[in-house]
Amino acid sequence: MAETQYTGLRTPEALRVGEQVLNVVVDHAMFRRIRDASLDLIHTMRSLKMPGGILVQADPGMGKTLLLELIRRELSSESLSNGGNACLHVALDNAVDAHGMAAAMTLALGYPALPSRAQLTSMNRMTQLGLERVRPWVLLIDEMQHVCEGNKDITARSVTDWLKVRMDAHNFPVICMGTRSLERLALINPQFTSRASASFVIPAFQFDDAWRQLLAGFAGAVKGVDLNVINGAGCRPLHQACAGNMRMLKRILTYACMHAATQANRIVNLGALSKGFVDAAGQVADQVNPFRAAR
Image 1 (cartoon, rainbow, N blue to C red):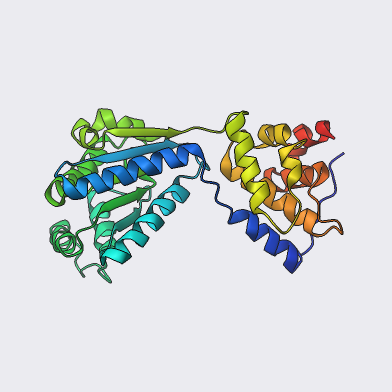
Image 2: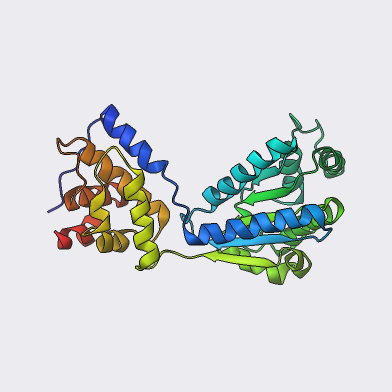
């Protein structure tokens, strides 16, 4: 029989605890490796004219957008002290083409609006002037898989050619985040990937020391409730429940902590994790609820 879920309005305290979980950032080993490689490339290219870039692949929910934000924050603090503007940041959608890439760059460079007749030649000119003015240290691109998903080889080639020309002319690296579809770029435009030649994959967490360290980071960061159960009895079933996916992990922990926040002892136990799992994955998931077997 499915467990009864708390479906009423969450208390303000429960919502505060939930927000605390969502705001936890655990800077795990793969994040540090990619971030360090990115920062090294960026600082190298500030001194040497050597077009470069990094492609990062991960399944949805593994923290690609968060990793870009961590890189952006670190560079922004550096650039403020140097009076510069270190980062350009764009997020692509599934309709992106060379025209869309130029439009995104134009807006990222600080133009308040596109020209009334947003032709590619006009936006290319605006982009050139903007890059000469801003002289960015790096271009961060989120959702880069939209360039090459589906039968879009010609479009993907034109977008990456557009990027390649600006990388060469203005000597900035690109750091691209996307799903596993990004691996097709090497076949579509080898000239681009010869520049963006460093490639990383963020895998789902395995049930190992890295997983335990990740959970320990959450348990130590969340102060509104006692989350120590995930360092013990909840460790393995939590991995089974989220399959090592960061987004699903956060959803389960968020709901579990909100349930615990409504209890007098404010302790997250296997029962709260079980309820959190059903809240996060839906009632059908209760049939394979790993926290029930662990209780």
